[in-house]
Figure 1 (cartoon, rainbow, N blue to C red):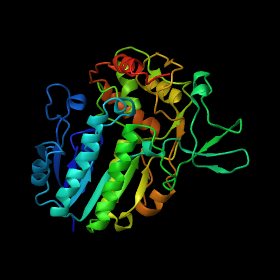
Figure 2 (cartoon, one colour):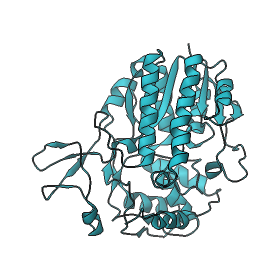
Figure 3 (cartoon, rainbow, N blue to C red):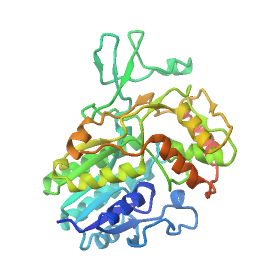
Length: 370
């Protein structure tokens, strides 16, 4: 029986909401987090939103001693500690590899010595690269990418034999197409965890998160989720910056739904050894997202469509959730507009440093935007 749970990265956005979910359901929770400056600010203070019932340990997942200490008396582990963001990963290659890949390897070596009853690790939809498509004859297209010449000429969609492809929901059996260092690191985390779990009889589940939104996102981190980046811009009365033409489609799911799905993945033995999409099953254009957020924030600021392309970006990807519904019995409960209203209410009390232009300049200087 699982009683005590360790959440690595538990002081962060999703980890802190998961901590609340677990404590509300009667579990004891221990958090291991290094309070990264990029996420938690220069002062690296323990966030005030953390559940007071959680046991907090400051430490780095790459530090074997810190991990071993955090694992004492633990029955299950959620591994969320990671660096996130596609763009930044393309030039901070060593950092992403050390934190994500080596950090996971360190945790797994410790789990060999101190096995647990369940390991749930946070993977990402980024490993898919482009989502699934169909051609005009309804044939499934599982591998495709855009040509640089097309992108330079503002041909943003996916084509085959000169004909535009239709995006469809992406299922877990799609072959990964790793278009960024971040995606590579998440796939490595996923496979390391599942391989080690199988070898040492540690029931393991990998959850591929789609775009998660909600309160507590790091608003001053220009490499976090797109809604948090847009919120940072709007709070500073700047237009959200959108790459390409703004019609790229993504799947957005509320963080409270994600926390519930994570708990179910821990509790249900049917999830052992599985890879599961955690998304809403809905699809929204990025322009729609920016406009909806501005509306709930009472900001009459239309987005800025840059027409630029970032190396590593994909056109369309949204979740097929049928496997997750079957395995976990999970369907999202938070309506998108209601989730945005909750986010807007929280944003009223927040101060955000707008670092988007700085991040964009960094990408441009390295030739990572077209």
